[in-house]
Amino acid sequence: MIRTPTRRLRLPIAAALAALLALAGCDDGIDPLFSRQALPPGLALLPADRVGIVVQPVTGVSEPFATEMAAAAADALQQRNVPASLRGGAASSYFLSGDMGMSQNDNGTVTLRVTWDLTGPDGALVGSHTQHRDSPPPSERTGDLLRQMAADAAPQIAAMIQTGAPPPPVAATAAAADNAVSIGAIAGAPGRGEAELEAALIASLPLYGVAVQPGAGDGLRLDGAVTLTPVDAGTERIRLTWRLLDGAGTELGQLAQENDIPAGSLDGDWGEVAYLIADGVAAGIAQIIDRTGG
Image 1 (cartoon, rainbow, N blue to C red):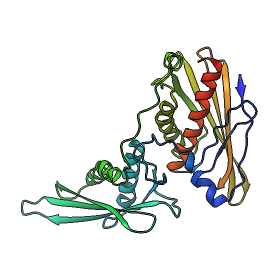
Image 2 (tube, helix red, strand yellow):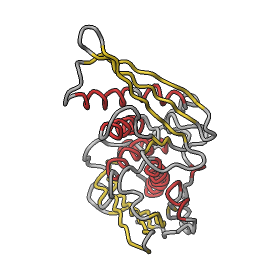
Image 3 (cartoon, rainbow, N blue to C red):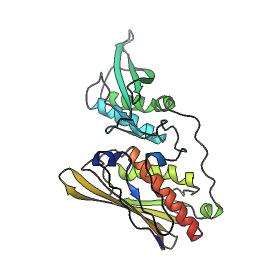
């Protein structure tokens, strides 16, 4: 079994959430430390400086629809491998704002209009996209339509920051293809962590030549566990432990990530953090597979 000791980065709490969990590595040569600069270029549609988009509640519509539309847009962007979240933001973040309008038509229907503006870190407008949708008069079902409109805007929003076609994934080795990794349980992750980490791992592992097996397979399985421990009133320590198991359940290797983060900062969306974590895990898993002969 390959086991790597945990190494922690001592960084300001404000910076910790943005990029900064340290992945184990040292004496056996596995050193997949990851940071904002270490994100793989193969993650499609990332902004040039590889930071996420903060999606703000939509104006012109009442709550809960304003936040629900923002959440639907963020979810759809994440499905396109664009890190997006409803909160956070740093000096280098992009911001997406939506504005809702409605006009009455002569036939009794209404036309819904949503304009999405993406601004860059300097506050300059990067791009704008406007949607129009005819609808029956507002009712209890209008919320579904609003959320769908927000999700439908994701391809156009993602295109605003696309820096070119992403490179193809690294070709999986024969050993990796024969022993494709399935994503097992990711226990203890708060908020949307389990789903977002799984999606990020599925996107990241092929970039390192590791094939992914949908569902439970007979080959390799990657299990994760997340624990949070209070440090003080405003800080908690997150530790992620990843175990690579073979088809018989024997542990082939283990990776650990740990850092201090603002308390409660991962209770909802994980956004870019999930991709930063997954990139480091994928790099380490690829090396474990290589060292153990697949």
